[in-house]
Amino acid sequence: MNRGITSALAALMMLALTACSSVPANKVNSADDLTGKSIGVQQGTTGDIFASDVENAKVMRYNKGADAVAALKDGKVDAVIIDEEPAKVFISGDKGLRILDESFAVEEYAIAVSKDNEELLNALNSTLSQMQSDGTLDTIRSNWIGDETGTHPYITPEGTDHSKGTLTMATNAEFPPYESLSGEAVVGIDVDIMRCACDRMGMELQIENMDFDKIIPAVMDGTADAGVAGITVTPEREEKVDFTIPYTTSTQVIIVRS
Image (cartoon, rainbow, N blue to C red; front, side, top):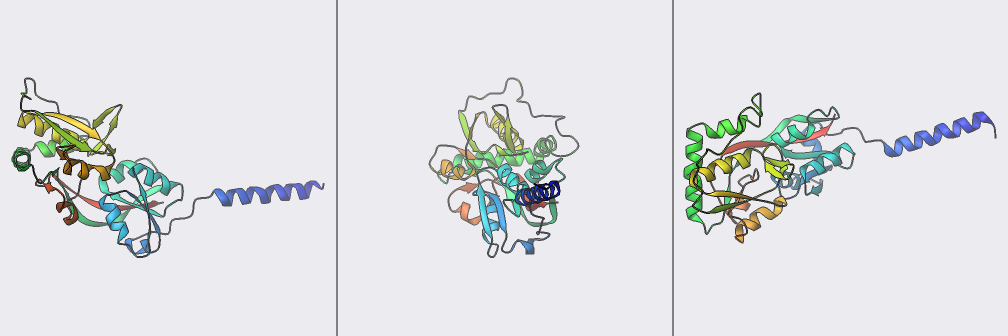
């Protein structure tokens, strides 16, 4: 066979392979561009709710936010809608992804408690109010977000009394910096807030890691005493559980390929 023809065939084959494996260029530069696109979300989250309202969108649901972001990198979805702080963690150091300047409405995170457990709801509200007033909530957040990251982790004071029982916290450790795994331990803002709250209420904290969409059902059926996982207060969720006062705010953002 003629060498020139062989080279040409090889070049064509390489071009075909490249075309098959290439990731499509970004076509989402604003929320308006989401119409008709495929959107990756973590199942059961507020991002899922927002994406479901986008006209003609194909919503791809994942158990982990990180899996939705991986799908975006691989070209399997056109964008990801997720909370702002986890979004920053997921794209950190990755020049192939960016967060659009446009964001959704401000949301409030709160702790979910069974409608049958008014005593715990009142105790948590009182403790969170105290932690807000004395600056503890701000101190905990600043250890995970910003220039002071890692400089002052929350530590249970020596001699703390935990004689008033155990509080079981349902969470989803796929949502940094609010909760994630460090080895086998669940760590993050929510964990430190609940550890401090339990210390002040005289209770031992026990953490149960589960899929995000299983948290509120676990609170409803008594498997867990509280759901704490960057849970946004929505009317639909308020029909199923009670919420404490908010302990922080966030927004939903859109991640796209650069």
